[in-house]
Each structure stands twice: as structure tokens, then as C-alpha cells.
Amino acid sequence: MADKVYRASTTAPVNIAVVKYWGKRDAKLNLPTNSSLSVTLSQDDLRTLTTASASASYSGDDTLILNGEVSDISGARTQACLRELRARRAALEAANSDLPKLSTYPLKIVSENNFPTAAGLASSAAGFAALVRAIADLYELPESPSDLSLIARQGSGSACRSLFGGYVAWRMGEQADGLDSRADLVAEASHWPDMRALILVVSAAKKGVSSSSGMQQTVATSGMFKERITTVVPKMMDLMEESIKNKDFEQFAEVTMRDSNSFHATCADTYPPIFYMNDVSKTAIRAVEYINAKAGRTVAAYTFDAGPNCVVYYLEKDAPTVLGTFYQALSSVSGWKEGTASVKSEFQLEDNLASVLKDGVSRVIMTGVGEGPQKTNEFLVAEDGSTVKR
Ligand code: DP6
Image 1 (cartoon, rainbow, N blue to C red):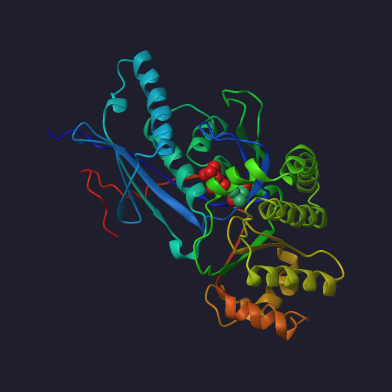
Image 2 (image 1 turned 90 degrees about the vertical axis):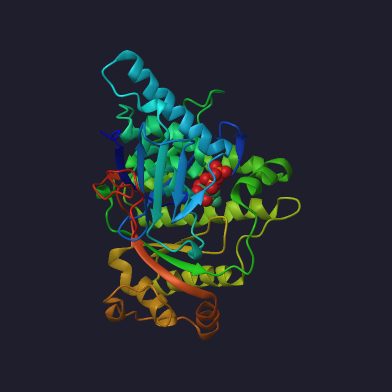
């Protein structure tokens, strides 16, 4: 009889930080210089599906197929995740000789995103969260999501926050071994379920500086950065947690925008400077300011990661004002959900703002706060170990 193929499948979400992680105090263990906080986005719109499998019948090295292509997993970060997960499985096998020796079998991992890579959305967070969760399930590890976040963090810092749904903090910790640098849940998605995100996908002319190398340059050269990590972020973290607990959108929005501005200011203060936002991004900021001014209160918040895409957070009740206004200007681009056309705004963006957005935004993604990784019976590796064709 052929050797059994052991399998586990999971989906994992993307998260977008509202207090940004930017800076490493230990690049090897991927320990940050500051705590951060993010909103997990709905997997209906953005998710990675990963199947991890192991079998004595597999030969050679561990393999990963990502979006249909063989992916190089020899890098230190992926290897650190695999090593940590295997060691935990090996410990279980040592304690219970009845367990099949999965830790000694090669892994075959197959992964797919439900969103186009061309959208320029950082998929590493969902990718590493799904990889770690799927292998942990395959190995039947008893570790909690917070324990697994220690492993995912070593793949990509922001990935540690994608092991939870809702509103998630990554506590920077202070130990040299990093065992206290982990994600924890601030609030479930159901605590504040009406949080929405509209992503304006802005095409970049050329690929910018990667976040890993950009943050290292900031740590090494920016004077302002020290102020950010010692004074600014600790205050932002407190205010952000308070705003989430109280479901206070105005405070949530102000902290989100201030923190995005602070992060991009330290990028500009890096020597030589790093610019992630372009003119279209800056026009999106003006559009959000315009909407808030017209509404007479803060109904929308912008935030930008290490690229030009704008994420606009708003509450469902303010969809007419926020979504409706962006729709009027951008109705010709793809990505709007059915029914958006009937969400009418009383305001209209000024022509100069609307035309820059229309020329520079290639598509939108409408989503909202969502759940953490989900176990699924949808497998990308068949029972016989072959890759499922889709
Ligand atoms: C601007 O998690 O991609 O999105 O740990 O080097 O993989 P590495 O960096 P990564 O950085 C994300 C930076 C950010 C802010 C954030 O998500 O908090």
C-alpha cells in the first residue's frame, strides 16, 4: 500500500496596520523597535489558502508551490518557520511513540491568493500566517495563535498579526530571545463589526524599496525615528486601543492618519529619503480631508503601507458619504461591489482631485474587518499527494 499523505488546509487573512511596525531591533529574530496594531481584513475579499502535506512517499526537500509556481523556500525566514514547527512536532513524537513521524517526512506545501499579485498588496502577512497555521494543524500542535505568532513573526513581522481576526496588537516585547514579542487580540471582529476598508490600488511606476530594507535604512539614519519609537508610538498604541474598546471612530481615525503620517515622515527623514506615497496617494489624502470637512466630522481615515496604495477606513453607517463620494469619482474602475452605484453621496469631489484619482487608481477593493485563519476542507494537495489543478 502506498504511504499515506497527511494533509491540513487553512485560509489566512491580510491585515492593514493602523499603528505601523517600522524598524527591527534584531533582524535575525525579526524583533521590532515598536509595538503595532492592525485591523484584520475579511477573507471574502482577500485571503491566502494553503495546504500543507507530509508523506513518507515524498522524496527530496520540502517544496512550496505559490500561485502555481515553484517558490524558493531556502531563505532564512521560511527556513526558520519550518525548523520551529518541525521541532515542536518532533517533541510530540518523542513523547508519544504512537504518533506517525511526520517531522521526518518532506513537506509539500501549496498556496494560492484569491487576489491578483499585480494589485501590489503585501501578501506576505497572509502568506506566512497561512503557512504556519497549516503546518501547525498538519502536525496537530497544541500551540495557541499567540504562540504560533512567535513563529510567523520570523517569516514576516506583520504576519504575526494575521493569526487573529478583528483588532490585533503585536507587542514588541523586551527579551533578547523574542519570546515576549507576539501578537494578541485587542478585540474580536464582532466587537466592532461595522468597520469597512476601501482600498484604492494605485499603480506604481517602479517597485519601491522593500519594507525589510527600508526599515533598516530608517533605523540606521533617521533622527526623527527615535522620537517615533520612544514617544509617538507608545502614545498612539494607548489611544488606539482605547478608541477600539470604546468604538470611538473619530479617535480611531485621527490616530490612524497621524500614525501613517508619522511613519512616512520617518521614511522622508531616512538618508537618502524613501518615498512610498506618490501624487495620487497624496490626492487620496486630500480627498479624505475634503470628505471629512464636508461631513463636519471625521468619517474616513487614510493609511499607507510601504507603497502608494491608499486604505480608507470608515464605518458602514457612513458609506453614503465615504464610499459614495469615491464611487462618483471612480465609477469607471473595476472592483466595486454590486449595489455600490445606489450608495449616493451628497458631496462631489472637486474636479482636480477627482481627475487625478481617476487617472491614477487602477482598481478598488471593498472590504471590512474579518476573522482570523480558518481550517478548511478545500485542499490544494490531493489525497495521493498530487497538486490539485484549478
Ligand atoms: C509598512 O512585515 O513586510 O506594512 O518583517 O521585514 O517582513 P518584514 O516586514 P513587513 O513590514 C510591514 C511594514 C508595514 C507596516 C505594518 O504592517 O505594520
